[in-house]
Length: 125
Image (cartoon, rainbow, N blue to C red):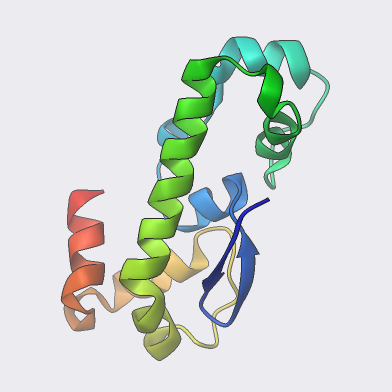
């Protein structure tokens, strides 16, 4: 799996990260484009905490091209968030535990103080 440095630790790029950076459930839910893939490969996997994402990744070679493309798109959005907001998160949210959107909430509470790159990320997403 690909990893990126975000805040003070290493977070696996997964559905958890994508959700943590503030994308809507509809935007991150791979069952839209990946519905058939989820039903075929991950029907017995309980949703949450990145389990569906991990299941799909374990079947990467077998996935539809549309599903692969969507997962790549979400991974890139996660990377973009990390690049745009890493320093702001270190500055304003260093005591906030990552996960379940806590970092995003913290950053939104400091929206007026964010760097231009992080503000731009929030404005376009």
